[in-house]
Length: 155
Image (cartoon, rainbow, N blue to C red):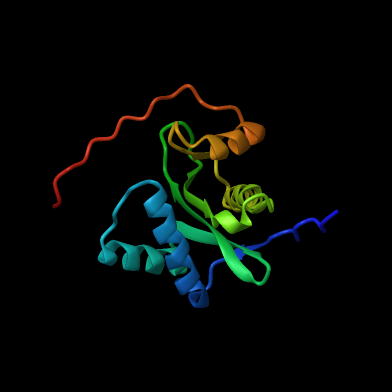
């Protein structure tokens, strides 16, 4: 019987992770058939590392390399004086799936949210993302809310 995959190491992203983050970010965007301009990608990376930012990033290391990312942000809400934590982007390299990296990233994000006094942690996925939903369903019940999005003109 093969040895089980090592438990992923979860840690905050560091400046030296940029190439790995960009590789995983690009794969994440491809998965969702999305395009983000380079200026936005560069600004996002900078905000994820900026001390005191409401945005942050956790990475999962497996086998000595970064194999997963979790980008999150905190925002105010009308249901509590405490902030809410939105886990905006979660992606694990296909070669590292099944190692527990995605679950470990979500659990680490939850710990960050608790440490920051958040009222709630939430995330979204597309309906067709069955593998992710199978994991998410083991972590928390699905909400009944439907999301509507409307693009706005650039300022």
